Length: 111
Length: 115
Image (tube, rainbow over all chains, first blue to last red; front, side, top):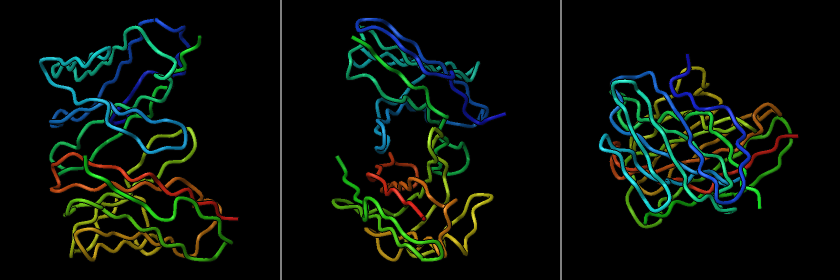
């Protein structure tokens, strides 16, 4: 079983759509959770950290369920510029700052 | 925010040559740097964790004699791919943190193509 698993993509949606990404992780000792965005042939960029209480940043909402070891990202009113690969990232629990990356879910927003 | 640079941004080399990639933290001191590799359509895979002044810790399956990592100062880590072969062609990305538990700041990556 992969340490971090994401929805297989790609997701093809029209502008304005709401899209949800799901992620599960296997290490119950993980303490930090993130969503990164990666554009083609570029480095990943931090989109948002994910907290147990849930957090929102504009059109983006992230949720964490520790009991189910499940993380989600919701994008509302999607824009063409949201097209990218979204990476679910979890820290390695007792392994210091080590980050474990999911395989990514590709999003393509069409006009 | 913190800035991390990598050099070169891309390199093409012949099989059997060695390639050195530099990772620099430009505006902060990085006690820990991480080296990742990403093959097409795959996610980032951690290769090794590098702490300033000590030997790097390699992930399982990563050959330490093939991927030499040096973290000689708080702002510079280097990855040398020795005797590169076509299967080493990949996107190599470094990240740097102030402390091992701090947010990681990623470099722009180095695309290596071995002919």
